[in-house]
Structures are given as structure tokens and as C-alpha cells.
Image (cartoon, rainbow, N blue to C red; front, side):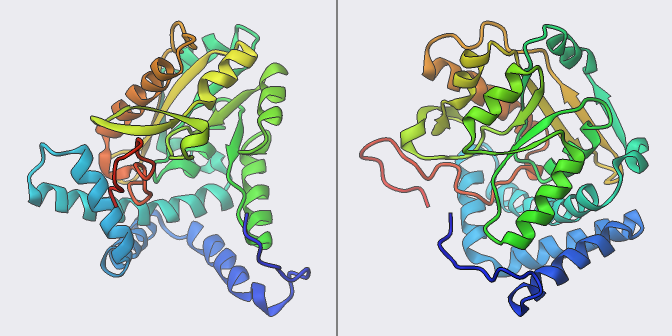
Length: 304
């Protein structure tokens, strides 16, 4: 958590840019859909051109994960990733600032019976989501079908944190700090469904190494730990923007069988197999801009 001392009053000039950003999110969320997508694409292309460090990280990730692609194909996937994530910013604004009911016609949900079956066990459910550019809009649209809580990373800026938490609390039953393991376990044991994303690198202390796209990836152990502590089924969930850029597909797969196994590396590999499956469907929509492989096995140099 940042040690920055923020002004107490949200009227302080320090927060004026944040207020402007929040206002812009509300404004853009109500624009015609085609215009919103065009703005998102433009934002993505701008960032692709100016964010050299993020472009390097994205290019490195894609080269590692898709060595079978030619240099031109990898270059295009990098560019498409920035475009998709630019559109994702607009989708996030839409998910946070609009009533999801007005977007029901834009979503198809495949495999609802899988989540319903898991919920019928009465043990609560741990849903595995992934950091796609569509994540926040996906959560809003998912709430039209099933109530769920969400695990999230708090924002350092107090004003934006309040805005973000209120938006997510409107969408989800409860927004739970990612460090609040007890809160997650408590909600699941109370019979709730909790949406959780285990696809980022949280460091060596809380992870084991497991294969992901043929690379040894630092993979958080918490997924199996929560399942072991609660007895809850673990249900994989995918969410993608369709090629028409107007509609979305939620796909819920059957709960993992025999999970957790008792072997941390086997369980982590199982989670990563699903993550890789989901990413390969629409690789440009994944958040390749983060350093997924920053933690390396002992003795290996940094990949970035």
C-alpha cells in the first residue's frame, strides 16, 4: 500500500483530476455503443504508441507464450492487445456507471447449469475469473444471472477507491479486499459465490511454480487453500467480447473434479490449464500488459 499522505477532503485540488476522470467515465458510459468502441480503440492505439515500457512487457509475454507465431503475427497481437484493453477501459466505465439490466440484450450465458449445480451443494462457490480487458463489464453482466461477491485490489487514491468500491458493491454482493482471506472464507462458508482471479504473479512467498504456456509461472496457492478451507466447489468462468464488438459471451465450465488434490503444484497446474484454455480463445483480450512471469525460479534471470 502506498505511503502517500492524501488530503482528507475530497474537495481538495489534489482530487480535481480524479473528479474529472470519474465524470468522464460517467459521460462516456452513456455514449452510443459504436462511438464508445471507437474511443476505446483510439485510446488503445495511443497507449500502444507512447507506453514503451508496457509495450516491451506485452511483446515479451506474447513472444514467450506464442513462439509458434511469426514476428508479424506477434507484432499484430501486441497491437490488438492494446486496442482491446483500450476498449476495456470504456467497458469498465459502462459496467461501473450503467445499470446492467439495460445491457442484458448484449450477453449470452453458456453453461449456467454448471454454476447452478455447484451452488445447489450449499457449500458456497469459488468462481475463477481471469484478468481480461472485459473483466468489470463481465462482472456486471454476470450479476444479471447469478449474485456473487468479488475479490479486488484496493486503489491507493482514496477518492477513486470509494468510487470503485461503490460501483462494484452495486454490481456484486460484497467487494472483498484481496488480503482479507478470512472475509473470503466467511462469505463462502455462509453460502455465497465469490469471484476471484488467480492469474497474476503475487511473488514467491505465496506461490508455487506451475506451467503456463510452456513457461514456469509463479502461481498463487490460495485457490486450493480456499477450496480446502471451505469445501466449496471451484468453478471456472470465461468472459469474452465477441468479434462484432457489440455482444459478449459468458461461459461457465463444470466445477473442477477432485480439487484440491492435496498437491499444491498439481492444483496450481490445474488452474493454469484453465487460464491458458480461456486465453487461447481470445488472446488479444487478456491483460498481457502486466509482468506475468516476473518471479523466476532460483538462478533464472529476469525475462523483462
